[in-house]
Each structure stands twice: as C-alpha cells, then as structure tokens.
Length: 156
Image (cartoon, rainbow, N blue to C red; front, side, top):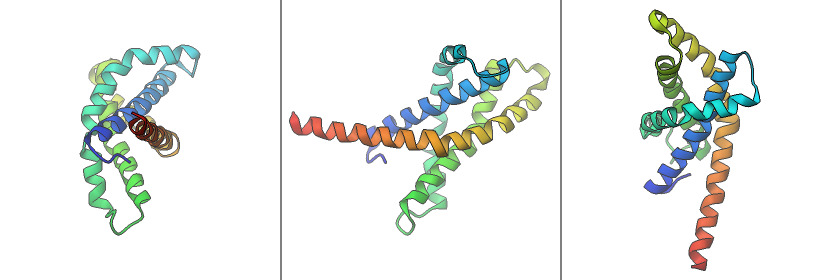
C-alpha cells in the first residue's frame, strides 16, 4: 500500500486506468452485442475523459469512508483493503455510470432509466473486477514497482 502522497497518486492512477479501461470495454461490449477485438481499441477513445473523471472522483473519498468502517490498528490490514475496494465501487459505479450515460449513451429523456440500468449492469462487474482482478493485479504491480525503485536508489 502507498506510504506517501506520491505513492498514493501513482497507486490511484494505476487503479483508475485498470478499472476504467475494463469497465469501458465491458460497456462497449454490452452495447455492441459482445466482446470483439475492436472493443479494446474503441475503449481507448473514451479512456482519457473517463480516467480523469474517475481520478478526480475517487481521490481521498473512498479511503476516508473506509477508515470510518475499519480501524486498521485493531483489525487485520486486509480488512482495510477490502473496505477501500468496496467503498470505491459503491461510490464510483453510480457516478461513473451517470457520466457515461450523459457523455456516451445519448439517453435523451430516458436519462434516469438509462443511468439506473447502466448502474445495475455495471455494479456486479465492477465489484468482481475490483476484488478479484484489478485490486490484486494493481497491488502486485505497485509492490514490484516500489521494490525496483528501492533497488535503483541503492545502486545510484
């Protein structure tokens, strides 16, 4: 886990990229009728806007709320990791689904219905992706990156 502000920004950026890209691919696949190779390229067009939005929204909010639920001094540190992951999805899924509905779904008068449907479809995917894939992958890559950075400092 990040130990300072720079590490927090790097970790959050990594998590945002992995989560947002996967969810964009998922939503494009839903709207085009299934997963195809072209979805990966199509998702790159939405990624800059949605990643910046997610980075701004996730900020310290999820960690702050998770700290209200879990006391890392008294409980297993993994409980804090789980709490941050779940709280992130609870906040991000409806907010990012709303942004995607407004920016990409052309919902018109049906904006509330389309947003609710988008959120309902996204929530199980976002939660599973975060808990089982993105979270472990990003934490692993972050730890490896920090080990490399420490080695580079020692050798410099």
